[in-house]
Length: 302
Ligand SMILES: [Zn+2]
Image: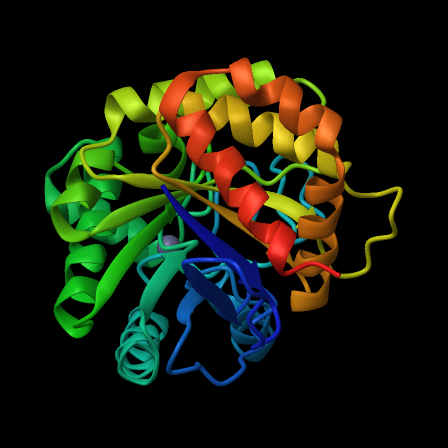
């Protein structure tokens, strides 16, 4: 079982197997990749690209993939997934990021949501393809992922939405297609509360059944602009990690803005001896591996 940090700053907390840096976020901002960290790249979610090219916005019968369109839960602006100049620029960018870091973990590398995209180019491409709507979208996504694989030489990890059942209908994502091109999956289960761990365990069991490559689960610890009352309590995070571990995840990533917030999180888990003892009985070897990892942090926290 592997443990990773997932941060917005290029600093590494101690006590983890690897470190993932958000080098390009959905805001469209970019920071330099690091040679000893993996690189997370938001591909089509890109506010800067839309600011520069408003006509690249993904379209649908329920409106565009724009912040504020409450038909969808969209928190940034999303480029049409067939936009040729954006596709080409992102491939060049990912090739460069791959060369300068330990490898690329793309997210937002698919259509914005169900019903997308109905811009004139997509409508024409779909009609010319002779395929059904869902099959055409799947092919567009899979073909682009194959191009990402060709352009990157190191480990390639596909970040996916935590929807095991309707990712094809919503995003054009077929897990078996992606598994042919990637080394691993990262199922992003960000939430500001893990108060009911049952749901996250259930999602993990579903992905364990479906995915044909190993997968990590990313959990939300402390994001930009959060206050302590906004974020999941460390005890919830340890409990949900236990439940996800016993359901078969191959590893965890913990998201914070800063590396120091990872250290705070480690300290809070180490100090909760009562919970660590209680969770010992929660599920055999994988749970023991997780709890052993927490125990190993005793040596690095103050
Ligand atoms: Zn389009």
